[in-house]
Length: 487
Ligand code: HEM
Image 1: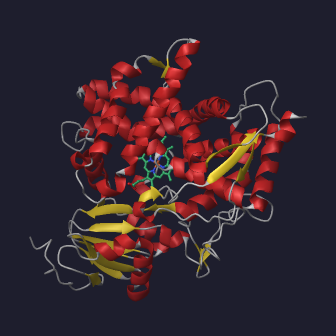
Image 2 (image 1 turned 90 degrees about the vertical axis):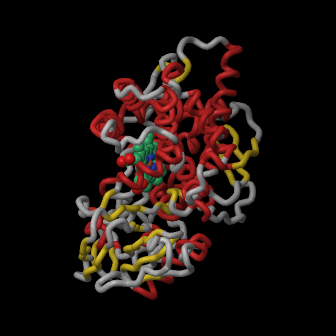
């Protein structure tokens, strides 16, 4: 009970404590504006402070030089307990930390690296590029004439379909013309269910049981139904990642719905951040004339190397050479990322920060890192709220990776994918797929924002959950690219 009352008092060597109201703590102020709240607390207390948030104690570490110190505390600070607890509650799969499953789950976890990185990444990205081209063909008419649609709708439709098919494959066999429409309808339904489920995440993260979010629960179960192994066996071109997860889960003798729910979890991980990241990347490109010109020039140069009559295929070197697109995506991620990295203290211990300051941490407390504080720090990024498409390029147009604070070079200057034990295993694939999406959009289409002066803000209710989506959609006008089709 002492945890939920405000009887907790600061002990020797513990960080400054913001207790707030009984039980609720400072959750209301924090929830209204997490960045503003943490910036103010940073001003008041410095690099480390503890806040009571709805009965739980979170110690925030705001100094970017101390990130590595926290990441190295694998023995004292646990990542999986928190992440798995949340995942199990939201997705409804088995408790993979239980002795029954933990050994086999280690094998499942190692599949992320084996299938999303290194040499397999090239094949996966190639498949994504092929599926993106199919998705673009579905939506970009060859005739002249502008189409108007929300930019978020446009991005989500193309990226969701291509990403889904790349991981989970497509219906086997040659489709009859009348079946093509039905497949499109299934994809639209999956996308709708995905968005309904994802929309409940702020409530779910705040602790509301999914059983109370009826729409989200129904959407999750509908997605799981489509991802039952009995359904997946009938699909072709399933990714190695999903195929090998299916084999592993079959060996673990989980029930069929439980297996399918783990696939919903994978679908969410692969899409929830990628969709808004792709949105912001295209949005900022279209809003910033210099970015648009530089990006299109880079795309046209690459496409000039590719035979006209074949589907586009890119080597690893060609993908890596698109440094302008990469800088645009990184800058969009910098401005829109709001993930929190959370660890749980396994024991009472002393954490020594980079400055040498020692802080006593209590067993069961949460340690939280909020990279948005780094991403919007004016010492590191001058005019931090401004989109500068070439911020991550040097004078020669090559990748820039040296950023400084107080004259000292930073290791962690851009952390949208987390770090340490929880670093996103799909980060290289994500960067590739967004790059490919931008490339095809700029190559196939003339695009413009219908109201270029409307400024969008991110939806802050999702702070802590990853890339913030826009708070509203914005109209896009697009048509088949005139200078390409009239050549
Ligand atoms: C985990 C960000 C795309 C697969 C994470 C985490 C972050 C993140 C911050 C760590 C969460 C935590 O600390 O609890 C992003 C962003 C993406 C992206 C910003 C796109 C812009 C992807 C894609 C995939 C993927 C495309 C797969 C195809 C995963 C998986 C985990 C994860 C499986 C959990 C890893 C684990 O349990 O150890 N992602 N992600 N992500 N991400 Fe991503």
